[in-house]
Length: 481
Image (cartoon, rainbow, N blue to C red; front, side, top):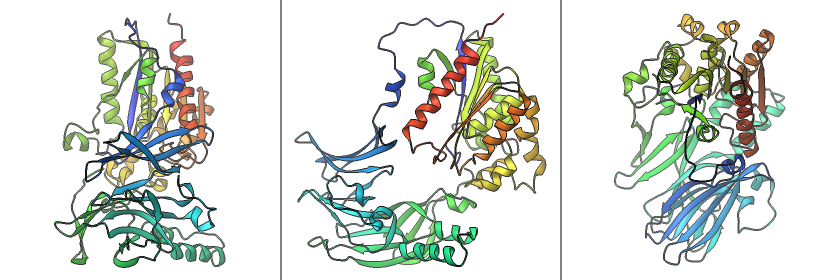
């Protein structure tokens, strides 16, 4: 499977479209004003349902995460806690009498008091008791929590953490000895490591400090943790950050009877807005080109060494077929995509002049520089079958930057300024090149946004609004002789 979220959209306008409307047309605002559910979990007793909602908070330019408890028998719901920006981690205890929560302490729905500096920085674990209807903090000193899981009873949790003091001391060192200069690899070793502990709770008095037992240190950070009582094991998944080795992408286990043993359970070999466009009268083709999933490992691996040109040919074949079948207008075509779809969009506009417009989101033009700056260089290394100096011809032959003089397609470009997955510099290079070539181009950058554009809901709305304007201007409104 691919290691990053990818999609590629081909937008084609129909010669004509006849349909009977059965419901009101989806408005632009309605498309964005909706509630998502990121958690849905029954209690072990089957009497309650725990669910989490995510709604855009337009006034704060953020997303509001809310954790709710639904009583199935009484058919009532109760708000347990809210969090701004960050999703709430929540897990039922084995008995179903407690819910453990990981969230920012100052954003709790029913915890009061002025937050301290530590409260603003650290995440805390809380217990919500269904018996007492109270939300109480677990006292664990100076830790940055990553994730957690219950043991086989309500009295113990396993937690993955980083030491707050280690973080604090490292920053003091940078300020005094390094004058805020950063020794990169040393910093990465701290960021991408963690320790696992077991904490034992006194459920009769949670105000007392908990007992803590060290399990082991890991050289990478983890995002998910699971306790398996039958085999006395912890199963965990590394965080998908700065993956420079395939080992960073595996699932591991620790035998709690022998915590020095780390076992690898998997062996990885690799790594919409189309509905709105369709409601605006566009036909959307999302081709399953070579390299995508669904047709086995050979189909996925076939693009090695040619990760743009091979899927690019598949996409153009799909467009040709739609035109041949009389479905798409050959004079009103657009191409667009985000992430890997952005890679392919940037490639296709260098290979053909048939598209009236292009929408490039978080795409790459220089694959060697992208390998050097992105947080998952393993993806590029896999796609090209080696490092830039090992297979230089593959990197050059597949890089759009060397063919940009062929581009004639008006291109709209989107990037998050803090994108670590596909550095924003790639979009700046594309914009500068097309500007110098006299090709209509517009680059929109979103401050403080990473690859997923999920920090400020306004930006997702602005992105699609401007992309639809671009399509209207360069595709829908053109006059065909």
